[in-house]
Length: 351
Ligand SMILES: [Zn+2]
Image 1: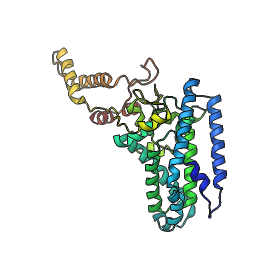
Image 2: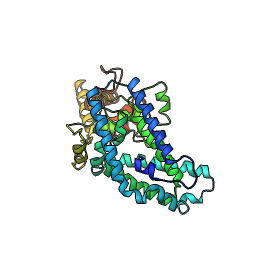
Image 3: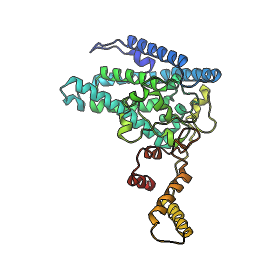
Image 4: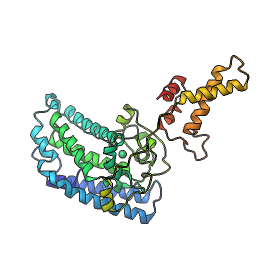
């Protein structure tokens, strides 16, 4: 994400598309438009007192981050890009537009992979949980990122820029696009055509699922700009989360939030369950009930399977749910509901 110092401190040499100051102003205007949208057409009404606290903490952290990241401005990504743009792998590509598109896709993919890793490894979740602990998801949550996480992202982007020789103008453009989209998908709003737009880009409803308190729901929808990566890697989930934030008490003030990243709070993992053994036992009892009469083995097995899955994971059918939401949080099973094939069912049961 762009920091103030990156935007204001860089002077373009080529190509002069938009001066840094104008870009900063554009993003500021984007913020005002999205914040107004959030205010006038909120997805859900947020309590004013807590929303004020969220804004105060998140913007204080943004200022701290901008100061902290200014320490690495001497070797900023843009200067690195200027230095390595004629040496990287993309330099072999002669079509400028192809180079620009690939550069953007690579940076967006890097953000997807980093985000996925932040949820997969406890040592990275340490930093990332700071972003997730906002219980009132709103546009300012976009700025709730610990500076140590920002620094690690900075290192990874620097490596990518050096390897592929991504040009400075493209780095700045991608960063500006990403900053806009990160603000956009955190906005507490909904609009017509959101679902359709979600086929291409990360929309607020998709990212809202990502901020669920339930691990099996928030371990999904990792994309920054394009939802393509989640679709490609099977991590896309479409559901309304019941609660936002992280489980258990966590600090909401600036100082304690900064300290919060140094506590190793491991996420409860989804425990592997020997479903096959449970289903076999249930099927045996069903068979016993009808005196082991032959010919109904498959029916017993399928009934037992359905009952055990419901018992372990809850009722996955939205139709049968009193809340109108799937009662199970295990996203593979939610996706499974769209697929009636027994083979797919078996595959999930075996995972
Ligand atoms: Zn996340």
